[in-house]
Image (cartoon, rainbow, N blue to C red; front, side):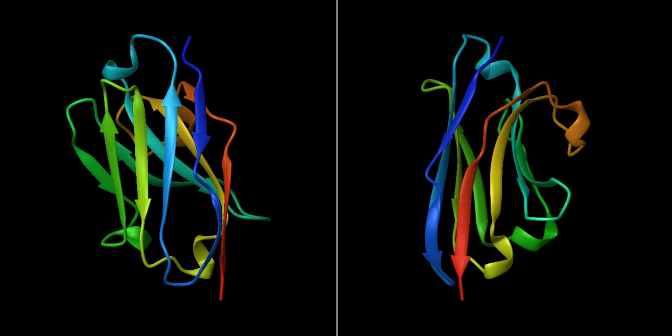
Length: 120
């Protein structure tokens, strides 16, 4: 069993930055790909970024060049550095552990989410 706890969300002005963290329990963190997903009010949850156990990364087009996903296996933590934030980035952000895929339904474990609000 893997438990995931996100932190780092908050309120920021457009153009600002935030860094989200997701701490995982369990000794098998390093074998999973770790992903970030988000859900805006009234919308479906969507893929944002994912990093494989070996460090391969993938991003949704809307965040390329602005967001960076990274992981520290020694700390069992995955990060999402978000720069040049836009109001449309406002959502609850979730981290998840599972296979290296953008398919939300394939992820095995989910955190509770952290709110990110970007004001214009």
